[in-house]
Length: 330
Ligand code: NDP
Image (cartoon, rainbow, N blue to C red; front, side, top):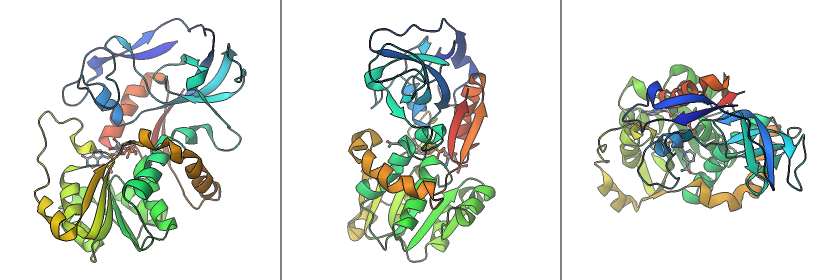
């Protein structure tokens, strides 16, 4: 069994020396556990936060210990009632090849109903993040003009398509390459999209959304957030999902300078955590599952092969190497 350990807490961009791929024994499942051979590991932006010591919503990773993360795999031994050898499960013991998982913390998934990888993305955590953030936190309603940043990523691509399918008047996205921008328009059906590297976000947003926006789904923070506040319509809502532009910052980033606009617009900014919204999971799967199956809601994945490349896959998410959900295939 090979597994990734955190050796030191990164300052700024994580460096290879902060991590090690360590060889260990394959664990033996105890009473109530199953042994899982992981097939896909999830690498996610939030993991950068867990590499720091600062207390946050997720426990910091321990030093010299295997890191945690979403994974799906096949049960190859079972000491638990209700989960059999050959079943597939979703669980939180990623960054390793084999895991002894408490059956109570494993969720059975059906590889016949959707590709296994989708349970980590489009039908999994990132999909639910898009669903809960747009519908609940941003109180999306038909006719809203919706702007989403990180729009070619796992969460963002689903936000834009959900908004379209649910009757948005206009869907606008931003991303970091021309190829991603093309994908937003041509494959995901966004009405307008721009490459944030090509010029000031505020200017590009004004062109893309001449009548302003009612909802901004923020994956990025920084300049994007300020631009969105500047474009907000009356009773506009901003859901703060992530702020990836500051995850490697070593100093506090400057805040939006135009918060006073929230007064005349009666605007609302609210952060959320997907973990608080798992009550929506059945409704999410019931509504979005058929759209995915019918190809009305499309998703991409960037799949990196081999556990030895997991760290590079993780850094790739922070750099924007991925289109859609970034995954490691073992
Ligand atoms: P993505 O698939 O969107 O991957 C991250 C993307 O961020 C990259 O592909 C890159 O795309 C973009 N990016 C990186 N740096 C910058 C930058 N400086 N400015 C603008 N864009 C940048 O990841 P996820 O879909 O998994 O996550 C998206 C966001 O949602 C993250 O902020 C994450 O932390 C957050 N999140 C929050 C959750 C919650 O419960 N609140 C749950 C899950 C995710 P590009 O090429 O376009 O730059």
